[in-house]
Length: 74
Ligand SMILES: [Zn+2]
Image (cartoon, rainbow, N blue to C red; front, side):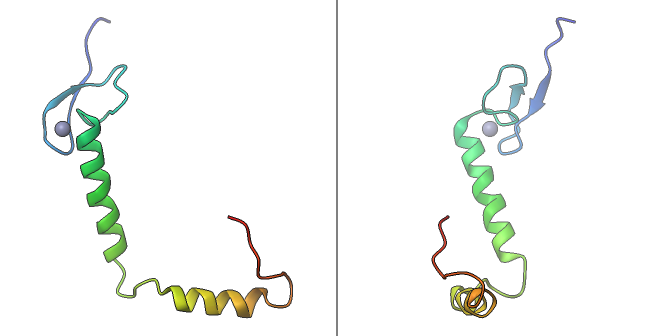
């Protein structure tokens, strides 16, 4: 049971000890940040249409205009 679980870092392929590794499955905080950045940019460029803040605001006005005050806390 003393076997160490080692996984390749998804960002740089370096071997990472899984156990008690706060940045797993990455070898370091830096690789984690890099990968998250990649993932985020992938995610946001996937759909053909961009999220348009103007459209969102417009929809919000239409759908919530009667029911709720437009002030929302987030
Ligand atoms: Zn790495």
